[in-house]
Length: 279
Image 1 (cartoon, rainbow, N blue to C red):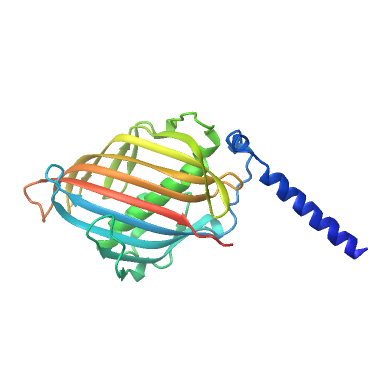
Image 2 (tube, one colour):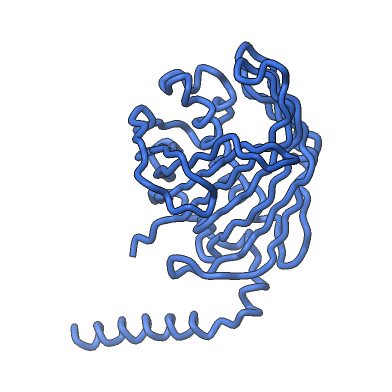
């Protein structure tokens, strides 16, 4: 009897597997994201790479170029996330394979609630050295962008249908004693499918081409605009972000102790989140 029960169990598994494998591409495109059960309780780990360079916007003369590697974890207790293994290095350009990096140990255990606006306050970064706080704000806001789209926007998408969230139209994002970023709009479209970590994923592209920003504090005065675009691969089985990338281009006038006469700067950033495969 036990042998028969075991064979029946194996047969059911094989039958379900066969059924899943017969799902066509067209059937994936017809999936309604609202009907996918999210998997938010398991800890997910991402390898993160952030690269940025400052250039003269006309001549292309490079002022500096840097890269950061980090580990980002989501799904912790109390809806928390954290950063570990953050390290930094100078690079020649974005194409360079990262050389040996310098560890930033005070980022280890940098933990906070994912669905909270506390990241906009200056006190939020009090345990991070002052000269590393701008980097921390980049990492936190980039992660918020990645997760926010998956949590709040994916349910509104249908294949090849453009979506423009009302929340991101003429909305100011103000970091205390840092930058004020005005989101003019963001256009989002589910454009295709791909596969990562054995998961069939929706490719969700996003773009926004004119967003004013400004900084006015003791360290610097900045006035400029940002444009950015990228894509996310969101699992069509559990809504987890499997992969995300973004490019940002900022043209700004900068006045600081390094540039007392005001300098025109082109800041370019590339950020990539790749979820680790647990299998």
